[in-house]
Amino acid sequence: MASRRLIFLLLAGYAVWVMYPMIWVAYSSLKDDAAIYRDAFALPPFDDLRTENYVQAWRDARFGDYLFSSLVVTVVSVTGIVFLGSMAAYALARFHHPAGRGVFWLFLAGLMIPAQLAVVPLFFELQTLGLLNSRIGLIAVYIANGLPFAVFILAGFFRSLPRSLYEAAVIDGCSEFAAFWKVQLPLARPGLITVAIFQFIGVWKEYFFAFMLTSGGVDDSARTLPMGLANLSITAQYRGSYGSLFAGIVLVTIPILLVYLLLQRQIVKGVVAGAIKG
Image (cartoon, rainbow, N blue to C red; front, side, top):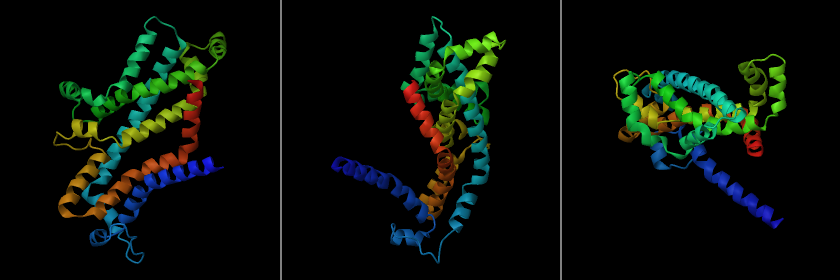
């Protein structure tokens, strides 16, 4: 009993340590700058909630334009990662080839080597292809960056599926793609959902590649929400308008929280199933 109580206290303390900064940012977004400077940790007065901070953040950071760009980039990138990653993982898990293990380890190298090391050649490659400062170029980078994780997770799911199901589908007249699409892929649904959720969160909040690959042109239509939040942060440092900065952080964080709250059971199922099956 004592050990359980100690573990509970440790976990509760860690939860408070992690959650309090988020809660502090949330209620500070409803305070004016004078109140933040006067007492940073005090709750906002309920009769004077500064909801105009959200209006200012939305207007100054052009969150409307950046939100549309983030939605396009994130949805297309996650779709490409799940689709291409599932096919690659299925081929590596189901079919035996002398180069198969080498290709699988090549994908794993994408998880071991920091992608930031390739940003210089990647920059010049996209510039040569005419994809710099464009959504297409950014989406291509995100898909390539997310494939190693998708292949690593999904390969374990496909290896665990009974081969008899594949053989029965082929005997019944299914082609290789039909057996994959109609039989194998639906059975790997927990892994697909897990990969999609983690990649959604990663792409939605990604800043480094967005800054390096979309901030050099006059046209800023390819810039995403983290870029807008960074601009708002720079503005807040000079103006001292931290209320609007906190409001911008809340606006960027809300979609991630909603996705996690709505799909937290699928996340846990996918992670546990992948750990058992892998």
